[in-house]
Image (tube, rainbow, N blue to C red; front, side, top):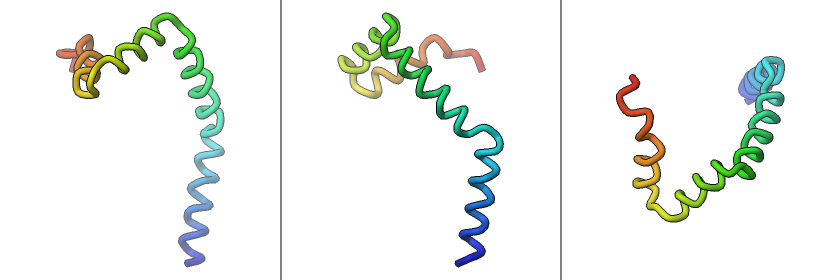
Length: 67
């Protein structure tokens, strides 16, 4: 098992060196900003009103045919 522990430690260290915590911090701030914005609140209201399937179709509609 020591080999697995060292491999995991190495991967974690590489992710931290690549900026993983900076990415986490940005994500937290971006999500917080979304939740207090008018658009973000509208999206959250839609999520509460719709089934998950309906919401995902609504969310993805503007991107249909872009691939």
